[in-house]
Length: 113
Length: 113
Image (cartoon, rainbow over all chains, first blue to last red; front, side, top):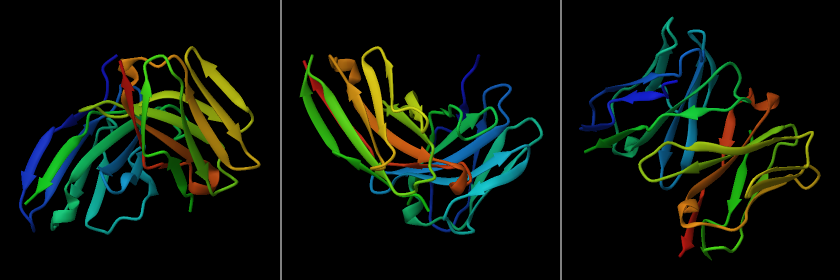
């Protein structure tokens, strides 16, 4: 069974630009969660999508948004990038509930200059 | 919301020795406590989890204990090996937080050969 895939793996942007990251969950998984990982803050929950609907949301500004498609693939978008948005963005998929095993992808490393 | 504290932030042990990582949580309604291992350049991977109706769970060299009264849980790794070197994260979640997971800040474990 193929794992969670994230594209692109690395990205360099400048302040003020926007970025879209993509996540393909494990086949059969309907739920996708996104996390931001930084050395200072650790793993911070961004949002979770289930069956194309946002089910949970973390404490991030509105510049961070996401969506999920009918095939469970998910995208997250960050608009008006700031230097502090530089981080590893991780996607995790699970079958139904957050209380099941979450399978993480390798992440997309975003550098904002 | 839930708050998870994890200690120590770094841990160095001799190969063959045991390693213990401790976490405390704030929301008494949390009932799911997974532990993740993250190796360099990879996403976190679940190594063991425990639910609030169980006090201890073991899987080969890895064990987790949960004390709901004190709101803390611990990861125990026995007979450590160099390949155990990684960053370990604890997390807590439950219905009161919408099932989303709150992660600790991580413990960097180094096993000296």
